[in-house]
Length: 313
Length: 75
Image 1 (tube, each protein chain N blue to C red):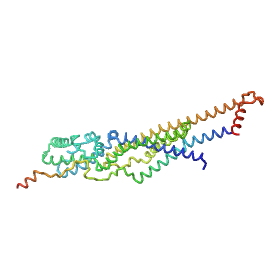
Image 2 (image 1 turned 180 degrees about the horizontal axis):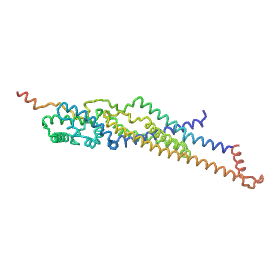
Image 3 (image 1 turned 90 degrees about the horizontal axis):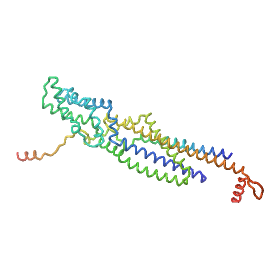
Image 4 (image 1 turned 30 degrees about the horizontal axis):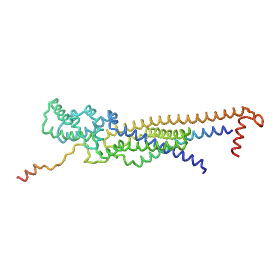
């Protein structure tokens, strides 16, 4: 292997390493700002499918409470129905990210909702309600509501979200430092000449194409929709929505990188073609301009050839 | 002749750096990601872990009631 091939391999390895760090930087920066951010998921919690999923789960729970306490199951549905669930479901993400107990009675007044709602249902239908039974049923209904809105794998999930929000920032900073160091390495490696842009362009294109390809793969395989992050089906719908958006954002970054890389590559190609045309034009001028010398009239090109021969000799 | 050779070399170089290497890199990274997701990523929660102590539901705590204990002693 000659030194020229070795030099080119070293350059390519450098480009690929730079691509890896650019990729890591974008993936982790987008991660901490989107899927690592509690507020991001709230945009995906306004989904009717989630409300329907929560209502079904809550109805199942309240049915068993109704059988235990003797209170009408419809009274529970009347007290906390679809409207209440749809207003409270935005808070689900807080409970998931908090990593600890979350009581919806504190924030959404669920306890009073059940107490007043059940009383109102019995009064409206002209039935008698035993207060002791009501007092027994309300805490059970609240507990059921908390369970339906919460997740059981809180520790696992809080570690995961910690990784997404905090660890990703550390990784992003580390990737940025390595990427900048490699940029400087490419600069010194190419001696600051225009060809260094082709190395940068190669790295940008590699990272960009990868990001777009990851998005396409996710669309084809539906990877994020199969992610089983929590034991709460409704929350998983919102999470997969968030992850889909994250991949879309990454694809946008990827497209931007591809445009930047392609522009750089086109610039390099145009620069060297222009340079070659200029050299050719200069040579043609040199070969057509005659000057007087001791050997008669010679072209500038001949003089240049002669001096280079002397230098080589 | 040399000029044509130089132009070809430049085009080949740009094509390699602009298309071949990025596509190969992207395919390799995507394949690695697919392999990792098949083997199961360690930091991804399984969603099936059932830890009663960490449930979001309000938990009923059994606490030592000092007053109750004093009644028993007095009785």
